[in-house]
Length: 106
Image 1 (cartoon, rainbow, N blue to C red):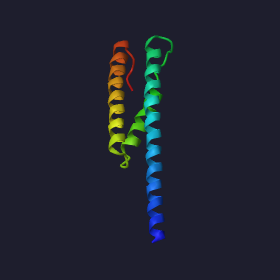
Image 2: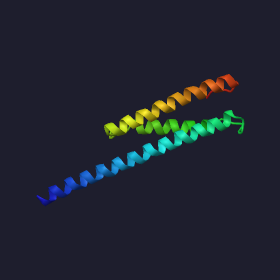
Image 3: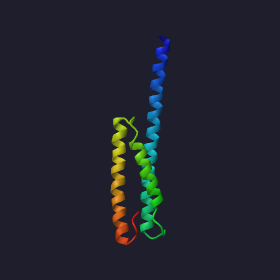
Image 4: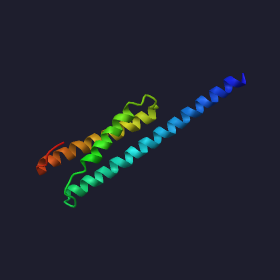
């Protein structure tokens, strides 16, 4: 009986650790979106010559990787969808701004 209880405890503990890891990924995603917005603002104000397209591509891949995770809780999924919605609206704004500026879209 002690063996079963120990296994259940380890299973619960591993799920908690996984939830904490997912929370850290979501917080990192939120920070990266904020930093990318700042980078694009700097670019559109003329301080840099190249748009931060590499950082945008990294963020796209991070979003795809997190969206493939089936272990998100409802709260984490809601927060993730809110972040993706914010990123999508920024991406559309950047696309329109790049088009107005005459830059090549990648």
